[in-house]
Length: 424
Length: 85
Image (cartoon, rainbow over all chains, first blue to last red):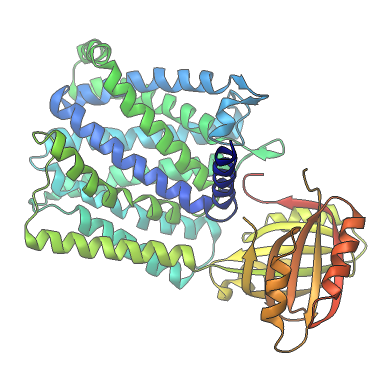
């Protein structure tokens, strides 16, 4: 009993650590781990059950849609005065029917994902060696970096650019195969495939940033609805591309035949995306993506383990040079991710307010990027604000400049944190 | 029992005593954050208390720590946080 209590306390402690400090990193990286599992499942299904990429894609979307809707219903059930979905995303409050701006962003996310998925299946089906060009999907983080630049209208910190480049090129090195790179294949990857994936992440971030009353929309509804749109567009477009209407009926039959492995594949995909969208609510797109590209590293030990059990499907063809290149890639990614997670500075700002409601100012303060929380206090200062930034060099343009533009702030002092301790 | 009221205690410390004060502040059960800062105050302490009486007792306790010169207490009346809240 005592041991169990201790175990529970330790477990609670661990959860608190995750929530308070590293949630953003844990969500992004864990999403990457699940993505590696999805890739392994995809390989298994396409090698042993559904060889035709068009059939595979369509049957995956048929089962995926049914599974996602069922999950949304299941997660809306109450359990101990909370909805089950709240354990996955604390913002979940049940099913939402998207309208207005939310509907627009989710549709655009679904459309972009459909473009990416169609491009992917065309590449897999038409190219002699798709594995030579698919690694270039890792460059998507670079697209997102530009996207972040356009959204936030400010220069990223040098450390962000350095780390992201390390992760992107690291992932590329880990993933590169010795095959011949087909130019059209490369254009398809760098064009519709990467731009589609970029659009999906960009519009999910937009949707996640919208407010549903006082809080933000939850990642479960965002994922389910965008998948419904993706499926609808994919299912309508694929027969036109392969010029066969009967493919729909045929794929549906295939889906019913292999529903269990397909459902397992989409279940893991669901969790990978839900975690990814939650992370998008907490940080920049490029950083979430850089962290989640850890999946390419995870896929190596995963493939080695699986090759012991199913050597006919999973195998690593590694010579000494490839091994060395992969190793350099892993080291680059590791350094990039660690420097991203360690390069943060915290500070406090103490604010004196002129005749204006502190609550109004509190709300304005929260709109500033980098401000974690703000407290209205009774004391010499009216407001105490906690700041978390990538580098101190960003403090002026991100915070100080914006603070001075808020009406009602009389004076403020900035205290940079040199050393910190937090109860966990 | 759920602790309800957050409060900041801003502390000025005698030269060379920060490390010792830092250690002792961590030992206070109600402490949630201790930050050594550069600027007007040397240490920012964040505590969670049930009532003002408890906060009073903590400040009394802090005043007994060797090296502490001055404290300024701010009780949080309202707090808003970003992200998932």
